[in-house]
Length: 504
Image 1 (cartoon, rainbow, N blue to C red):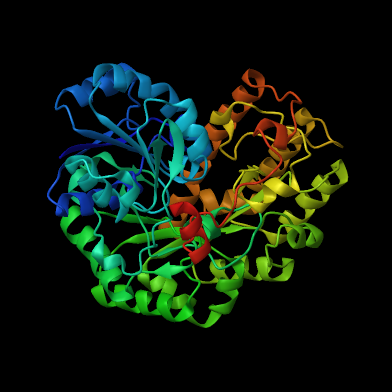
Image 2: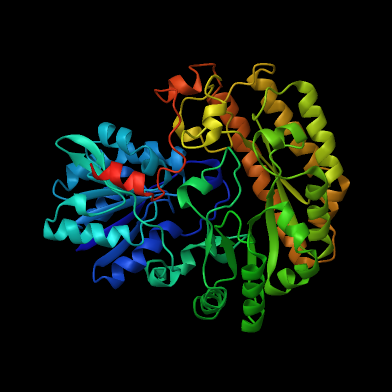
């Protein structure tokens, strides 16, 4: 079959402001298996320019495909773009099969199939094995019921097949790197960059995150093979930076250390950035020199809140002493701690924000980033916040950079001002300015300056959006999503009960 992989444009602040874009790793991950299965595959990356709907349709018509596979990394905030785009694709290519995958459609498959008649099939969960099976069924006319891990219309009604087993061996599904022009993708201030992934899933039960449910369990690639592939990207494709898509690549100390030693043995110059938990950094205090030697430069540490009661409520499992120690250890080994802080998890007051500012100043982070609690329906946090009011009903703004939930004790405009004040106090400290403009380490200085420049752009965009999209109290979270029941976080996991129920 002729297949077009479509990465739709995404207007979220994180996508537009940096002026640099990483390749759509999820589509590349299914592109490799589809190519290896004998299909003619191409990528239409509409997020680069970004492209208009007319330009996207023209790009598809230039070599009309048999199937268009749409995927994005924006989850909830990217879905409205897809909903507006698929009618134009269907009008221009009436016979094409439109397939949609990602986190949002995986859980909202019933709603999507009812609201978007142009979409034929939804891939639920991982697509590396499901997509090739689906293409065989579409090409041969086989019954779609025989393909696990999808949803479609049966007798006019949305219907889901049994969940597909998750990948056990990542080696069977190679990344389709040949689908991109590496020169089109940069990050970190002009560094040629790609996204890659050492592991999937998360063993921790944080209530606000969908990683645990979507990936069902934590798994990792072969450490030596992963290091070898990174070295190949550096030597053959000129890649300078790897942005790890993992939520917790360091979950297994044994596997992570094996990867670090293998990458060091490859003897390539590469910068690695990613996310992890403060607990893991503290645990690995004795091997942090291997992190640095392998090329690790920055880790995002999700603090989520500095109040112990908040950490307990969201089942974060962290603690203030470990958060502070992780920041110190990273700096001592020549690495950067990017600390995120979130607002909206509890019934906050002005005093809570003042206390948050003081605690973050005591942490002395190198970089800081604010996010807003967002009640995705497939997370336990949805149930915790079901009775709270939604103040932003435009799903395109559910990107963690816009306030979504009402804070009853503090009006939205003051929540915004508190967040900006906290960021300003942290980023304009003498220590922060010295790290950005005067510290002797050139690599760290470049990283700090780049983040400072990007931060200015984010600030201006957020301030403009604060006037354009003013939060207004609306329905409760449960009313907004059309029901009080949260979606099953483990809906994509294969169990005998689920398989039997789905097969009925």
